[in-house]
Image (cartoon, rainbow, N blue to C red; front, side, top):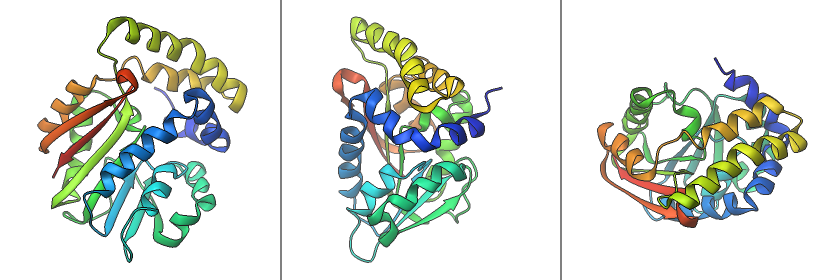
Amino acid sequence: MTDIRGIFAEVAPTYERANRVLTLGLDRRWRRAAARTAAAGGGRLWLDVCSGTGDMAEELAGRIPAGGRVIALDFSGPMMAGLKSKPRFARRGAAVRAEASFLPFPAGTFDLVTVSFAVRNLNRGRESLRRTFAELRRVLKPSGRLVLVETSRPPVLPVRWLYFFLARALIPRIGEKISGSKAGYAYLGATIPRFYGAPELAVILDQAGFARVRFRRLCLGAAAVHVASG
């Protein structure tokens, strides 16, 4: 079994730099697009799940209304160390170390839940992912929203083949050069081709009990933003 906790501890110091290089900066653009969509729903208590080094939490902290609070949750202490360098989050956020599948919050707590480029790491099978989505839904208020941004499966076959080839061939090599972690980026590169397409992920969200599930593809379908109501 893959030691995901160990992998993220190993890649944490160079994680953000590797993301910028591997995506040519597109990860930042996609995350900002998702944050804009998320912020449009309003509310004053937002939860960023699998927050990692805090890129999404920082984007949200810059958009939450005055008096609001962003909670960044992750299972990896080394990854969460990156939150210390996020100035907007420092003013409007708080960090919680916990598992996404067992959130330490009462039902109906949050106006917004987000996950950015981490749903692939929660995917231990379709039913397991459905249960995790149901847990995210549990902590949402009835009027709350879930916003996900994640890599996806381009619908046009030649684009998909090229994208998956690059994921398998380049991510492990470049990631290892930047981070020194061969196993870490071999794992991360392999998660992209085996993840769901946007329509299939929408079905799993629906099966988890979410309503009004919709998605928007980004960059020819290399990524997608999903929005759902609790």
